[in-house]
Length: 380
Image 1 (cartoon, rainbow, N blue to C red):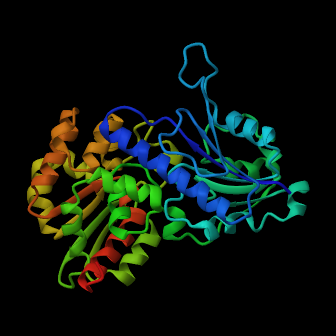
Image 2: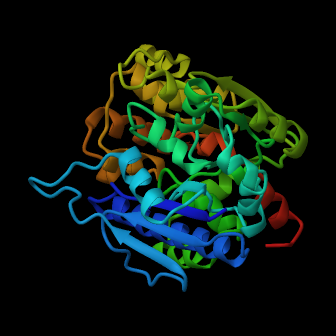
Image 3: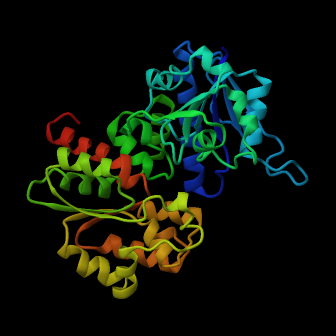
């Protein structure tokens, strides 16, 4: 059985913050492919991208650039078709796929664990799939890889591939217990802060983080509140039960939790604008200045807020550049006036407020909590 690992990278260009994330994704993709090859489990390793990487590829990694991407008159990019083409040309029987930012904390042994259940018999039988999230995947392995050709219509992205393999073709889908490592994903430049503080990023990604020299003071100060026994921290947004359990067992502070709009993207309520947020209602009724300046300080000493559901509720559809700037507290470069007002109010709050996306209130928080404890214990 010929096993292959495929990483896809594309669609990230624009201003300085977008270019920073592109460099981080490129570095993470190459780190992942190198770690996979080092296991000896894979016969080929492919990076499929829209623009040639600026970093040299590790030995054994094949880089394939889609020269028609974005070219007038060229064939439009289609996720499933591009992946299937690679599978067929490289005669891959067992496939491990991940997005460029889906495995920044996974080592070779963890990657190997996704393909280990794909026994040779499965390459010729009814199939088996292992994924990090059966409902919204960005990392999965399955055999036989030829099953991809039977998904009709061809998948537009990676999220639903395991679920469709199960629903449409009876493939057995398993999901290992979710961990920090299998769930951490690079969606925003702000996600680099927790990785940098943790010291756990792989070599190429570590170099990008160090070169970026992001302002981390606010995140550091807010993270220290997590280990103060008399303090209270608000965590709001698409917070999972796993994050709640981690904080309950590992953080010293009291935690006030506002979990809302879990599954917003999968349900499409972000795209159609129907997502509803208590935080969004709060900002709409009180105004951003009062919400962050007067009301929030009555509830907590620090806040980690996934602001995306509130933005949908408020009808704010920021550009990607504005979204990234908001995550970093960079109100000065935000063009959307409503978003800029929210970030300015959050920055001016008497309590420490860290804004971000899903990753902030997901896998980033345990890393930040551990960093705070390590610093307290003199390990940092």
